Length: 520
Image (cartoon, rainbow, N blue to C red; front, top):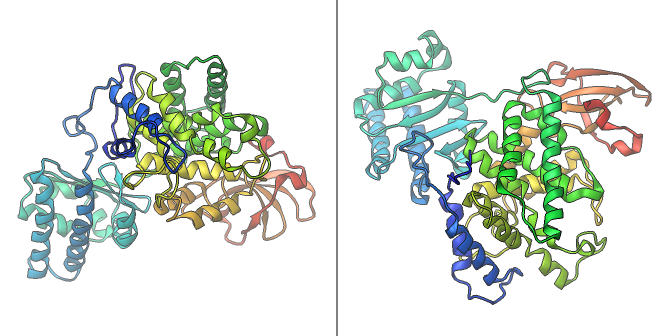
């Protein structure tokens, strides 16, 4: 977590992107994005002046942060691991084809070890990570390897310095087994111990529990956490009008509450993100984006400092908009060039404001600066030279897009949830990270919580939560008959009712349905 002394979970690539964004600009000149280099320079200076106590993740026994070169190198290692495992499925591990593969793996691993880092590969929820870095392209390219590891209940492979050829041969022998053979041998941990693994650790698959209403975190506490985030945004706006700033301890306290509740009861928190308020859009939008971002982020890592940093950036991502005139924010028609230029400045202004808060780490500031830069680099502010958005910025971009699409604005109607999901999918690879979009749809389901849906039999139901691995078959509560008569709600898990299916989402206002009443 981010403590009051300002220790941080620094994201080097994200910070580098922020600094490079301003380093080549001349002070006082405007860039094409509508942002001023002088303003951006202030962000960099404030970031550099932030008092932090850097954390050595290797020394602390935590997740390793890899350089860009080391991250790119993972593709070759994964390719060799996949090919060697396949060979070992057909030949004994003593066969030359397997032996050559083992030597190739060790060759790839040795490059990391020579640079003083161990290899930390993770496999979960259909994705591959190296340390804390989500491997977007590799997750797609080695999809079969991810499925193979899941079938063996293997969630991570850590290869430490000092590993020898003989031990790697034993690792491949384990990986070549099927799940029944591993279970028969007493499970992964017992088998690893029996095989004498010392410098390689095969970790069990981490299953994210879908917690119900009866979890340790009560509904009242969850609602208080959400209300606290909305109230904080109201207070920040009030203070800004008096040229004052909110205390960083208050921001971090609110974010801690959000992180705790998302980790304890993710799906109950996600249900709250359906709350909308047209008159206080910015406040509710900020709270919703924070929860959506934390839910998505926690499907990648449960590291508390990572989530705290993500939460601060997500909650304050639109802080720069609070300085804009309401006439611009609430304009029903298209913005003129000057108005649009002002809007495009809000990430820089927001990053400037947060950069002066003591104890806020650099990754949060980078997230605010980058959340509109787009996955393909075509957004704003312009990056010089072009660089990829940081992971936390990409997470917030997905959450921001979804909540904006499902909210009523002065210039657009709210979209129903399945339409918003479809539009997210169409944006994957251009404005949004395709792997994160896929994770988000898997997290929320095609029909997210609070969706009102028409069933194939004509009934009307409210979606309560995702269920199982099929994003099209959530837990629902049937509230109306095919004839339109309201009935006593009946909760049904569609995973256990194959004869039932959802036809699509409907606008609850058309049927005068109070969705909130089903989540009391």
